Each structure stands twice: as C-alpha cells, then as structure tokens.
Amino acid sequence: MNIIVTVKQVADPNIPPAHIQLDPDGKRIISPFGVPPVINGYDANALEEAIRLKEKHGGKITAVCLGDDSSRESLKYAVAMGADTAILINDPDLVNGDSATVGRALAAAIKKIGGCDLVLCGRQASDTDGGQVLHWIAEALDLPTVVPVTKIEAVEGQQLTVHRLIEDGYQRIKVELPALLGVSSEINEARHPSVRGTMAAGRAMIAGWKAADIGLAAQTPKVELRELQIQVRTTKAELIPGSTGAAQGAALADKLHELGLI
Amino acid sequence: MAGVLVFGDTVGGALAPASLEMAVAGAALAQALNEPLTGALIGDDLAAVAAEFNGGFATLHLIEGKHLRPYTARSAIAAAKAAIDAAAPSVVLFPHTLETREWVPRLAAMLDTGLVMDCTALNAEGSDLVVSKPVYGGGVTAQYVVRGNIRLVTVRTGVFEARAGAATGAVNKIAAVEPAAGRVTLIDEAKAAAASGVRLKDAKVIVSGGRGLGGPANWHYIEETAAAIGGAVGCSRPVADSGWVSSAHQVGLSGTSVKPDLYIAVGISGAVQHLAGISNSSTVVAINLDGDADMFTRANYGVVGDYKDVLPGFIERAKQLRG
Image (cartoon, rainbow over all chains, first blue to last red; front, side, top):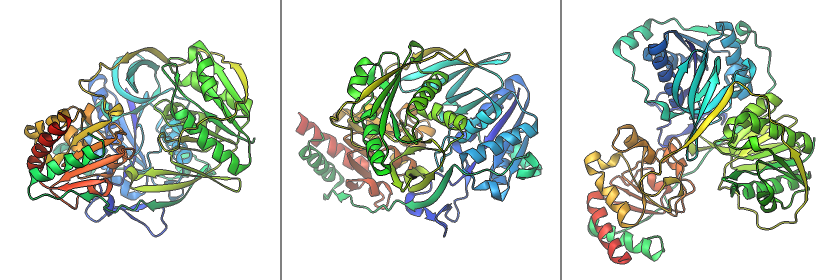
C-alpha cells in the first residue's frame, strides 16, 4: 500500500503561555529560544499509522510538507520514524497561503508523486487548529474522506473499515481506496525515532519543490490573516492562606462551600 | 447573494442548545450587515425542534429525510446545499461540532469559498466579514477576513448567549434527496460503554491531576478528593501520555473540553492546550507547589503548597461540610 502522509511543522504546543511572543508583523509566533518547532502531533499519529500499515501490508511511505526551509527538521523526523521519502514544498509564495492554497499545493504535489492508495493527514494542526487543509486536498484529488479517524479496523483489498469519533462512541465506516483519512490522537501512540532511523534521516535527501514544479497556478486567498493578538494573562487568583498545608486545604473547602460549589 | 443563514443542530432528536446561540450570533451579524436572517435545520423528524428553533428568521428552511440520521457527511453536504440554494445567503453560520468539522470544510472546497472554523467573535466591517478564533492552544487570538460569495463560519459553542424568545417566521420544507451511494458507507454506530463515574464532558465538578503529583502511586489523592466532593476525575496530557490513567480522563484541547462549575487542578502546570480545554469552566482552583505555574493565570482561587498536605485537609473539611 503506497501511503502519503502530510506533515506540518508547528510551534511546540507545550510552550508556556507566558512565553509566547509575536514577530513584528503580528502574523506569526516566535518560538522561544531553546524550544524548537516540532512535527504536528496528529501528523505524527498519521505517520505512525502509515508505518504500521506498511509493516503489515508492505508499500512505501512518502512524507510531504509545505513550509519554510526549517521544516526540513520535521521531515527528517518523519524519515527517522520510518517514512521512505520526504518532499518539502518551500515556495515563499505558498508558505503563508490559506487552507485552500496549501491544500491545493499538497494535492498538486501528490499528483506529481504519482498518486497513492491512501493519504493520511492529522485531523488538524495544533498551531491554528484550522482543520481544513485535508479537505481541500481531498476535493482537489476527488478522494473520499473520513475525519476524525480513531482506528483502522480492517484492510480488505481496496476497502478499509475505520472508526470515526462521535460524541458518545464511534461510527464504523467502510471507505474505498484511494481515500484520505484525517487521524486523531486516539488512533495510536506515535513512536520515537530509533538511533538507526535518526542516522538514516541524517543521510536522507529531501527534495524542495516550488509552485512551478507542481504546476500550481497563482491562488486568490479566500481567508486572510489580519493579525494575531496575545491573550494577556495575569494572575488574578485569590490565594488561600493558612499556616499549614492542611489549614490551607480546610480554608479552601470553606471557601468553596461558601460559594455553593461543594 | 445576501443574508445570513444560520444552521441549527439536533442531538438525539432534540434541538442542540448551541442552535439558539447560533441564532443570536447570526441575528447580530445580519443586523450589522443590514441583511436578512434565515435559519435551516437538517434531520429526519424536525417538527418539534423546528418549533423551538424558529424565531427571528425571515424564513426557516427545513431539510428533512430519513437518510439524514445517523449522520453521514455526504448526506449532510447535499442537504446543506439545498438550504443554501433556497436561502442564497452571503454568510452561513454552523455550530462547531464533530460533524460540522468534517463536512463543512468539504462543502467550502466544493463551493470554492472561504471558511474559518471554531470562531468566537464575528464582526461586519462594511460588507467585510471579520472573525476571530483562538489559536496556538488558546494563548493567542487570530483575526481573519473571510472572502468568497458565500462565506462560511463555524462558531464555537458556549460563547454566545442562547436566544430567548423571538417572533416566528415562515417555514419552508424541502424534501431532502438521498445522494447516490458513494465511496464512504456507514456500517453502524457503537456507543461507548458508560465510563465509571461521571462523564467529564457533562461533569459539574472535576478534580484533575498533573505531572506535579510525581507518579501514579500518588494518583489516589485525586480520586479521593473527587470522591469526597462528588466530582469526576480528570488529568493533564503528560499524565495520560505516561499511562498513569486512561486517556479517557484527559482534559484539554487534545482530550475533552470541559465546562464544569468547579475545576480543581492539582499539580498541573497549565500548558496552553490544557487551559484552552477548561476555558468554559466557571470557577477554577489551582493547587501547586510552584506559585509561578501558568495554571494560576486561569485560576480564580489558588493554593501554593504541597498537595500531600493540602488535599487531606481539604477532604476532611469538605466531608464535614457536606456531611
């Protein structure tokens, strides 16, 4: 089974809120020193699932990323995890594109690669939580989709049985290949790269494609980011005093009882 | 194309409360754009929910068909297109749910138009639609201008007040045409076995533990505290990732978003995705040895101290008060 996994590099979601800073344009956040960007968590889940499918059914995994040159790090991570090939679309005209532009660019890249049986994407990226790019890819390639997928239950010929998350359980869904699945974190726990994988990643050649290479015409944005604003957080918590921890605990219980909360 | 079209939602045959929030968000936007407000519902038996949802709309479009429940993306898209064709709006609002997150972006791609999901504010600037949503786990707000002939927005639930009463408008029933079988087929739905204790999503009181507890051997402090005040047990992502407790207890953007009256966070540092998941909580208490923990920025009450001392004192007093 030939699988393409889309990868986005994002600011580390574990940055403490107080350490988030914006660039001078107010359009992007700057990662604090010592906290490098990471591969989007759901995309790591997508890669893990691709690796497990390959282990069972054979095939090839290609990781595709749209981002600036620093995103090579996340593609190397993808190779270290187990992707066979990695491709970076690093056209400056596309890097700040909206979901439609990014989705169509990734779709064009997938066409250039020669298509595949399955496209695996993270359900959304943890930076903007947009959740759209995968659907623009699917529409451009006329692929059926299921999102958010929490399990691939069975692979039978050109048909998958998958679980789709609903509020109080899951739907079991059959989907014909080729297809695109948006995976959620429930699906697996992504592995950490092995030393051997990391060495392979160090040697990996990562192609860099521009819009012209994938035959993508200029896009008119449908959504424009005007600005980002940091949510100001100040501690306004009323601290509960007490001579000992136990006294603080009792005082807290009194306070919450007074408020009718316990 | 003119007008704001608002989609309601049904859950288990009843009107989802978010529907009335959408009606309020839509009414304010329609007024700002000076365009009419219309409504739409998709489902299989809409008479009762339509009567509840109808209010403030020039027209309420009902797209009914047995095949629309249980939900499939293909049927929802076809039904929504019928409503959009009938209403010819310039803006369409949807409640942000697990369903709309799947089918609305595909609809946007099919209509080749602009969409922003999970918005918390909607504004008109002349004829421009400007929306805001939390990004980077809720630490940052992004403002976007949405373009296109039919601009689509999904709206976070619990942000707008629900509509009280309003004058009812005309009802337009549209028989939904079942789309031809596609490449995605629903086999069945499995409902999750009721988890022991109170479900996090609906819990009024939650006691949550984080990495600051030190290890799984100390987890009983959280369970005992929750039991003493009749609360559900939650945890932060690192705790679930380390396998101290099942990820079913995980609170946050990547786990369950909660909206309790009381949220007690013990030994949780307060990463952005955790704070985003508790943003709709009424009262938040942080208990942490580190007074600089980000959790205190969201907390209404704080205890700087060792939970091993604080929680036993809390439990003992709570039991007396509740006794």
